[in-house]
Image 1: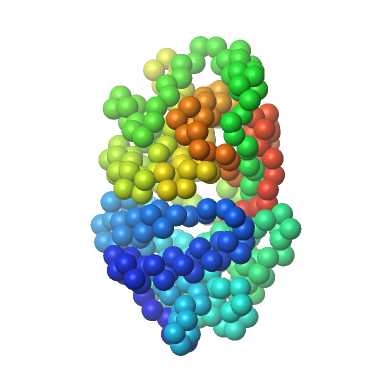
Image 2 (image 1 turned 180 degrees about the horizontal axis):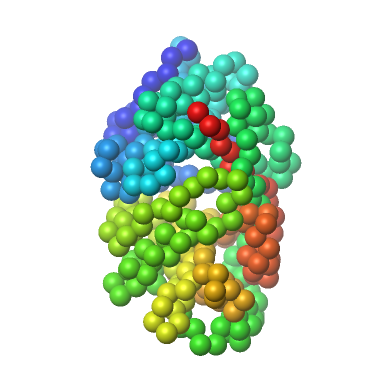
Length: 337
């Protein structure tokens, strides 16, 4: 077996890397579209340069046994903030597990992380309900010295949400959100809200329920917002957003995205209400607003997926009121190098 570094600009090499990713994802969650090739390739190509536009340097690895691709690795190094951390991903084809492939890939990723001066490695594990806490990835990470730092429950929502349900949620939310203004938009943040969106991004990076994760504030600015939007366009992603303001101050936002290459499933991105403005039903108001946008603009979408920390009772209540139901877990793990 050998470990090869993959150039995402090489059609053949990247196609082989993505084929392993797609096979593992189908084994984990059969029938779901998962990450699209366009998503993964654009992230990797954008992350080739040390001065990457979105602040993430990306390395792809492929494990090859003879003529067969058997596993993959990915390393992400942030370049704007959290310079002590590395994000790693290891996937091995189901019939090739327990043969040393995953260990070889992980060792290669961690060696690169150490060489880059990183002292903490993190990764995520998606587990369907039947495998929650007992998946091969769970056992693999435990064996290699990782500790689970955060547990989130995945919830799925069937769409379209009945119009009377959505209208009821909006009416209930507006009763509690008197005095707040909401601006909804898609694809591109309005210029006059750009600095506010960046400020909310910085706040989100340290205010979300993060368990035992050790994170510092992300360095969002207006330029980063625009660079991310440009990358979404290249991926073929569309996103909808809503922001709440009061007396001209941005106090809450939410975003929801879908890939035009796999429009059947949308994903809830970030949602944040600043602490001093909680209790006014802003989370419900903003989420119901973007769901209405999604249902109007993306009729092919049939499911929305979101994740919430098990400790985030207010947001869980919002999602359950909208009709989200549990469908497995997402755990975040970390290891000191």
